[in-house]
Length: 336
Image 1 (cartoon, one colour):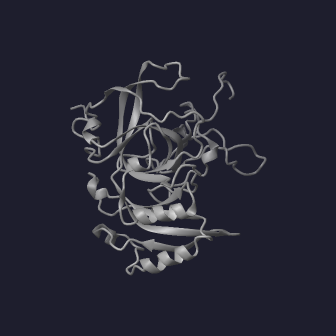
Image 2: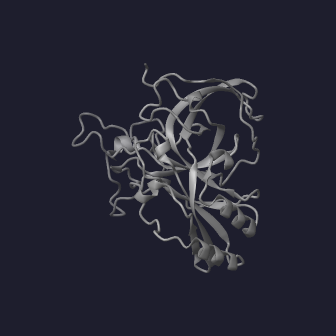
Image 3: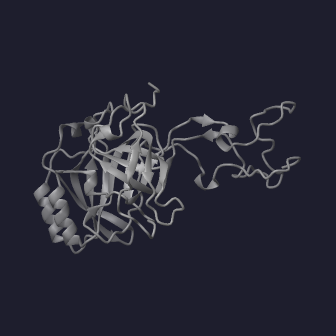
């Protein structure tokens, strides 16, 4: 570092390169974990309302604060019921999973007219019979579940469709399960439990094109230097005769898909008034449906769709119980 005596490594992980913009504001789930209990849906979706904080009694036995009252930041995700609009059956060959067929519900909500790709003619009986005849070839079932943004305060009517894998039990039990929920709505408490660890998949808040000082936190050059001040001092050595990927460069910052592992569900509540601050959440409004309170932060701004999934690498010791709350902040974020 030249005349600087202190150790100053570059900020920012190179594991996330290239930091390009996400192709869609909704995150994409590329992996589903295996579970023993079931059959059960392995995912859900909700809309981020905002953050707050709570005072609770620490219930992790290995924590140095076990049994003490602690303050913790929390994220509130509004999770209105999801409509199961279709079921997909998958077979497997040397090239991976292949769709055998899909069965759509006979009657869909009116808002589904806004979605492209929804078939106009439903051959539900034929496709169900096809699945029954090929149960020995089917390796997994997935459902197409749609959110209901009209039930929230979001100025949006078009549902967001999400493919969710059905885990646990046998293929026959999974088939009877998806037939039972097809065309019906599923609540968040039917999928997750309080105290459970889950993964969140979302797209972070976009910050546009930024320079190296904000993007990589490099040092600002001295004011007597030539050319730029908010740039890097050198692009690298003469050999190799190229700019290495490790050199900080300007570019897109934010609006990246991020998966956060093992976010603990502190509470699944049905009354949004329990967590809605005075005047509503900033840039969101009041919570009107079932909500999930997660410990810590979640990537993305308010109103962003957050996909929730069973933990792919859960901790060995899990306490499936909700901690005891002594205070939930209802202070207005607007300062009113």
